[in-house]
Image (cartoon, rainbow, N blue to C red; front, side, top):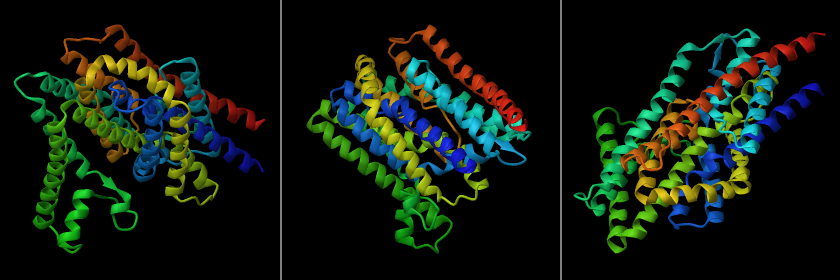
Length: 400
């Protein structure tokens, strides 16, 4: 009976976090630029982003989920009590952020909560993983902001017509998209990219070496060229409509990536709990359930956030919005590939700031930048401290 209650509490906390993630930045940000550009309605954007987040969670959520569940501490796995404390701490802090409007970074919060309860349990720090995580967290503002800055500068350059610049950006996005791994394209439980799957379909599974590499490169270039060619044709017919369509496509890719990179934050702490309870739930089933939580958050909470954010994005314009979404897509996919929990809020804010500086710093507040960074760091430290102390307190009470 106790085990059932423990699992039920943990599952509810996990689902709440999934809902909060869907209702927050990962559910509202991807299509806010398109809404601001009047390319899609608020309610339709909330509906679409929920479905794409669910798809991303199911198809790409495994790496981050496993990393959060088993790679943040070493020397063992979280006990049921430690997992409950980590989930409850993260869920409580996320609730504060959702209902009080405080900018809680979910990735920082969940990472801190899991590490805190794990260390309090007596497990060791996973320093190599921390270095990997910290590297991505530290590089995200510079890489995301830098790419957004260069992209926005390119789009603002009057010597480069948009009929050339925008398809060129679409070509680069196509290269990334062609090399993203999807579980459904690979044999068994292994992932395979669109370019790799196309190559294997032509040269066969037995081919190796230069043949496979050349085929993958050609497939990548062909896919990216087709993607860019369609957009070029669209821009030729109507430049404004073509930009809006590109915004919609980028929003869809970012929404999909958000699902894959964020669902693990809600599900990861459940993994050791299920393993120790000998509860056999296939990871795809767990990912789908987490995706449904994201979907619920997107459908119930995201429209209000999308409407508010779209007003901010409408002042950015379509060019700066495109510049912000491209690095967001690339960094989110990097996090999925390496299995690193990353804050979607950090990704998108960094990209917006970079595109803002390309316009001479328009709309960029240094005070807000400092406040946001402090909020991110505060989320990590607070979650770690509360989770560490919370586990010691609960463990002491259970010993009475």
